[in-house]
Each structure stands twice: as C-alpha cells, then as structure tokens.
Amino acid sequence: GQQLNQSPQSMFIQEGEDVSMNCTSSSIFNTWLWYKQDPGEGPVLLIALYKAGELTSNGRLTAQFGITRKDSFLNISASIPSDVGIYFCAANAGGTSYGKLTFGQGTILTVHP
Amino acid sequence: GAGVSQSPSNKVTEKGKDVELRCDPISGHTALYWYRQSLGQGLEFLIYFQGNSAPDKSGLPSDRFSAERTGGSVSTLTIQRTQQEDSAVYLCASSSQQGGTEAFFGQGTRLTVV
Image (cartoon, each protein chain N blue to C red):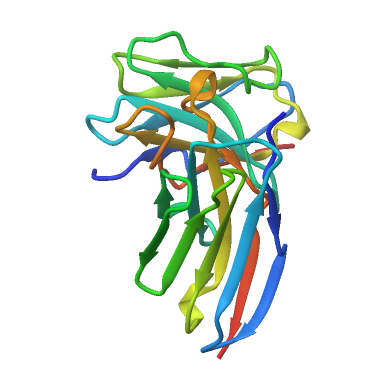
C-alpha cells in the first residue's frame, strides 16, 4: 500500500536553530500536507501544497511539494520553545483514493531554551 | 462550536463490550473522516464519508468496526466486542473540499480496553 517515510523520527535542538524534516514515498501524490500535534490534541494543519514544485511559507514555516510528487519537506526557521510537538506529513493520491490521507510516522521535535 | 467536536474525550471499557464514539463535524463540511492513532504512531485511515456518496470503508480493520453518518452531519463510530488491541485515540476530521485536503481534526477520543 501507499506509505510515507518521514525522517528524522526525533530531533533535539536549541532554541533559535533551524529545523528540517522530510517525507518520501514510492507513490505519487496530488496533495501534500503538514500537521503539528500537541499532546492530547488532534493534529492542526500547518501548510497545504497542491502543485508539484510548489514552495509555500507560513510565518517561520516553509514547505515544498517535490517536483517528482513523491516527496515533501518542512523547514522551521529560528525555532522557539512552542514549536515543540509532533509533526506529521500527510498526502492524498486523488483519483479512487480521494478523501483518504496517508500519514507519515511523525517527527518528534524538542526545543531546548 | 467552530471546530470538530468529539465525545467522549476518554472512554474506558471492558473487553467484549461495545462502544460508540461520536463526532460533530464543522458546520457545512461535507466530508468526514475517522482515523486511529496508536501510542507513538502515525494516523491510520479508517473510513471516509463524502456527501451522499457511499462511504469508503477500506480502512476499517475488521467487521467489528462500523460507522454511520446521519443527515450528512454527525457521525458515530461503533466498535463491537472490543479487544485490547482496539485501545487507541480515535480522531475525527472534516473537510469542506473533496480529495481529503485541508482536513480539520477534533481532539480525539482516547479508548482504553481493559
């Protein structure tokens, strides 16, 4: 089945550092999404990408939809303590798979003040 | 409310009992999804409703799991004869667009089967 390989699994960084995480797949997707989940909460959408090659920013966050449509990355610049959480990539293949988001395993981010 | 609402937030049940989990999607959203998240894991797709179309049930792990959506709004996920491996957080999401894009999640129901 379709799988997303998300890396790294966890990151421990100092406040102010930049962060990069990515997702890859052997399958092609039409939409890539990045979510953040805080403890005890549902995932919150950060960025949505709809076109291959698209680069989108949301404040300190930047994400790109890979040109091959098989990968995406998320960068966080100048990290702050509230960036702590689990970050998930998700993707939708469209077609007969519309409505079904496939999720990566998540990247646990810890930011030391 | 403005967001996706799920109830109960926590449920502890005995093995073999049936449970019902409820989801109130964002008003006007035509698409509704159920996902399951086991401890430390990503999200596992269970079922998808879109308008009046037949639901995509391809993610339901066994015939003990079923879901319905009444009146195109509220949804109930039912797990019959619960097993310990059913313990997880069950997340509901809704979307205003087809294709599963920009889904907004509720806080989830943490189910513990003892």
